[in-house]
Amino acid sequence: MQRDYKKKFFRRARRMVIKIGSQILSSPEGIEEGRIKGLVRDLAALHDQGKELVVVSSGAVAAGMTRLGTKQRPKTIPQKQALAAVGQIKLMALYERYFSRFNKNVAQVLLTHEDLANRHRYLNAKHTLQTLLESSIIPVVNENDTVAVEEIKFGDNDHLSSLVATLLEADLLVILSDVNGVYDRDPRLHAGAQLISLITDIKRSKEGLSGKSQSLYGTGGILSKVGAAEKAAAAGIPTIIANGLEAGILSKVFDLQEEVGTLILPEENRLASRKHWIAFNLKTSGEIVVDQGAYEALVKKGKSLLPSGLKEVRGSFGVGECVRCLDLQGREFARGLVNYSAQELNQIKGLHTSGIEKALGYKAYDEIIHRDDLVLL
Image 1 (spheres, rainbow, N blue to C red):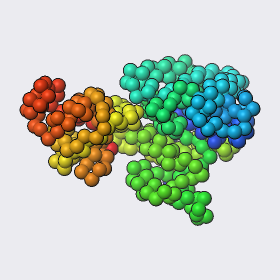
Image 2 (image 1 turned 45 degrees about the horizontal axis):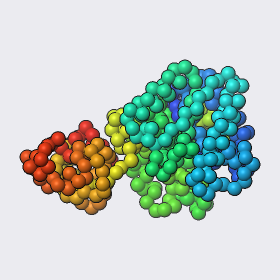
Image 3 (image 1 turned 45 degrees about the vertical axis):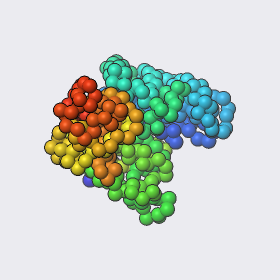
Image 4 (image 1 turned 120 degrees about the vertical axis):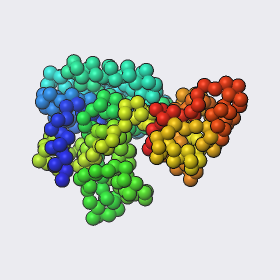
């Protein structure tokens, strides 16, 4: 079954993002150069076939440990940032060294969440990466750990890889880690756990598999990978999760006759680029609760959100910020960009649009969130 979909999606896949996890490139002793060498050989072979490649690579901290002869993982953010600053040079030097053996040029691209949350910087990053690909250069992307703090961190490179894939409208996302894929049960606890080779509906599967704390874990971080695949699927991009510790894994991934890892299919109704950016790139600044009538108007009729349907405002946020939209049971069903601040919304909630100007002394918009700025989840 997986083979059929691999033939459908992989044959025409030209632009792809390949995420290489820290578990692949590092060990307790630091960076594993032999693994980088093997992966680069397979990546170069794909590039020779005319594929456009973007590598999202972890491993800067491990490389810093190797460079400084440190055996103990950093415990504080400043220590991690210092090791990342040292290690990023080492990591890129290794990629440059091994890719150059195949006459391939690489470029370093460091990003923070803020770079992709700001629409102007988002587009700048997109144009830079596209120019590199058009010049047959392989970008190596990593989170900018040297400056990233909690407020601007992606959280992990799985999330970053899905955002980069969406940014570039990639044909495929490949996530390589120390997991074989997605299992029906935790293989660490259940000897009979079965690898799921194909997921056709990621939203439904995620609900069924991740409800209990250990139901779909592989050997680590699988929920993060499934979350990344869900974001990619919303943009119409298929994802394959495979074990990067397995020799020649990329050759197996792209062998149309071979079934490997877990292939997660894209959604048929993909989100438009801007709505995907709102849903997955922006961090939310607050929450608003709407009544049943407003919920049905938004979900079933595709309407904008008006003040009359607003029941409660939570948090402090300004005009144009992204908020979570909750129903009366507290379930998030949408995200959107607000036309009024939290303070203003508290003054106009429950009012008809005709009452906005009287309450505030002015009226910027009839809608709290316009339907063009609203994404149903």
